[in-house]
Length: 214
Ligand SMILES: C[S@@+](CC[C@H](N)C(=O)[O-])C[C@H]1O[C@@H](n2cnc3c(N)ncnc32)[C@H](O)[C@@H]1O
Image 1: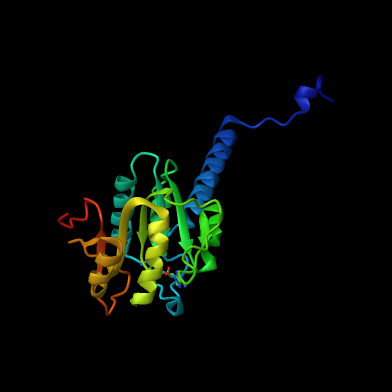
Image 2: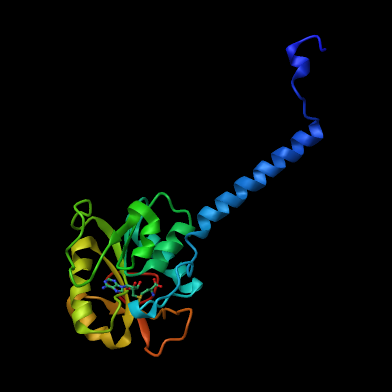
């Protein structure tokens, strides 16, 4: 029998304690990585029925950086039918920015409160928490290269933005995009993880790092 209760408490050697601490640190690192993994582009696979074509890593990063620069310190960014830009922004750990993903595909609801269900056919059918003109910049990539789709998506963009617009769509939409949103084509060419048949472009209505000659 020991002399006191303390003597009966199992003691870990310094070596075992160090090993245990290392084990917990690794576990924490893995769970942090898991949290970050959910923002990987492609973790939600493309569904071509929904016209889903994800940007390359480089393009998503460039667009995310552009959105950060345009929104300014602590700004608000709306990603409309552009989930890869949302994912890239969140991968960059920019918790100082308020970022929303407006998407039709409910698989993106994994992003919780930041997911806003959005169907371009009902352009202003948005929840009350989304106030008019409450975003510093709207990044949008409408699902279809049609006049109807761009017109309706433009209604949403104009409702959401305080002014700045970054639109990615086909080169064939240039004239209509200029008429509806006052945007100009940039020299920067967005790339996708797969080669698309249509020529894609970025358009902005402000002086941006994507070089559009404004
Ligand atoms: C051409 S993709 C743009 C994706 C972008 N390249 C990216 O990597 O983030 C069009 C997006 O519109 C979404 N979409 C499909 N049908 C929609 C609808 N009815 N209303 C709004 N968005 C829709 C798709 O889920 C897809 O994310």
